[in-house]
Amino acid sequence: MDSSRLLRTSAVALSVFGLLLAGCTEGGTTPAASAPAPPSAASAERLKAYYGQRLTWRACGVPGFECATMRAPLDYADPDGEQIKLAVSRVKATGPGKRLGSLLVNPGGPGGSAVGYLQGYAGVGYPAPVRARYDMVAVDPRGVARSEPVRCLDGPQMDAYTQVDQTPDDKGETARLAASFKNFAAGCLKRSGRILPHVSTVESARDMDILRAVLGDPRLNFVGASYGTFLGATYAELFPARTGRLVLDGAMDPSLPTAELNRDQTAGFETAFRSFAADCVEQTACPLGTGTPAAAADRLKAFFARLDAHPVPTGESRPLGEALATTGVIAAMYDEAAWPQLREALTRAMGGEGSALLALADSYYEREDDGTYSNLMYANAAVNCLDQPPAFTGPAQAAAAVPSFEKASPVFGRGLAWASLNCAYWPTKATGTAHRIQADGAAPIVVVGTTRDPATPYKWAKSLAAQLSSGTLLTYDGDGHTAFGRGSDCVDTAINTYLLDGTVPPPGKRCR
Image (tube, rainbow, N blue to C red; front, top):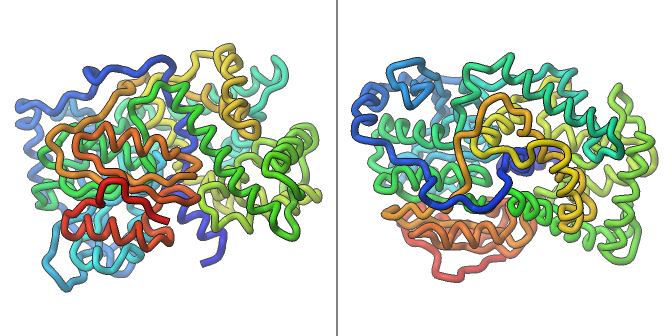
């Protein structure tokens, strides 16, 4: 597998969880009383037609995989109203051994295609003993990829959006950044106004329960990465008695107030960068020089500042400015296997040729060679802005938060603080709030945390495992985002054992 493909595969597993920053709340933790109410008996009665539907499976162009379309109500408050069509795919258990039912997978985002992840990785790359005994299944969440995708901008418009300066230095630059967020939101409303109010995580979790029933499983078995951990935990909260074996890898903490959540994630990227820098300065040709990781961080920050004033050419119409360069570096933080690629890209960019670092940014945004984009970024914003009220109501609040973000990350803090302004201009009102998830009555759940995870800091996994009444923490002492299937035999053995016989790792289990 070449390094660019490796980056794409691993980053999709979280893909842009970093952009969860754009959709969080400001203020204190919301009490547990604000948790979504479980579906009522009356609601269940009105949903019988959905729970009783039969899927028509068909070949879908990928050998060994089948595809189908599942119906769900667009608005669960009005089950008799409009419907939404959701894309489902599966690969049947290969045997031998007793079949354990279905195992749903979700790669995170929000906005990552679960169907694409299943067909491109999980359905062929998960451990053979797991694939032998489970039908591997995925559903693209509503608004994502093949499931009535949210659309916002065309390719040229998205190109312009990704190049907007996210570290404004004056009122004019601040106004242009705010205008870019407003234009993005307006594009989403224009192209996807029907679906925007109905792409919340709660609704996607309810969709998963319909799929569980349609597949004939009494309980939901699920592996979720990054944002997928929030989706899985939300399912357990809504349907604890129907929760089977859940693996939540690279966990999100749903209880944090937004400012803390965003600063934690900013600090996570700083931690990951310092780990990269410590490795880089030991190399014979580190573009950030020699010395300490702190000195390397200063050099990178200075390079970003130069790009802010003088972008470098890339061989195409998009020069490499500070915004795209920062995105390219952040993209490589998700997987330490991309560090050599990042060293090369920085060497070339600091020498005046930015195409390699631009390619890393494009992989993060899922931009294709023809200038088109997947809907990852559009769905990401749509879900985040619906799940939580905006972090900031306007530029003044974002500016006031910059110092605390820069303290968390001298390299990335300023830009990530301003990125939190996105949902201030969102056209639909948020329906969710931050709260603790306990999921009383759920079967044992395994929460996996990586100690130097850039996008979902380890402290979040510790917190979620403690919140869940039946949560058990599995720790991976390592770099990169998520842990399952990333090279640790210890992690993979512990998760495989849990998925195959239900045995959770012992308390305090740590892996390398």
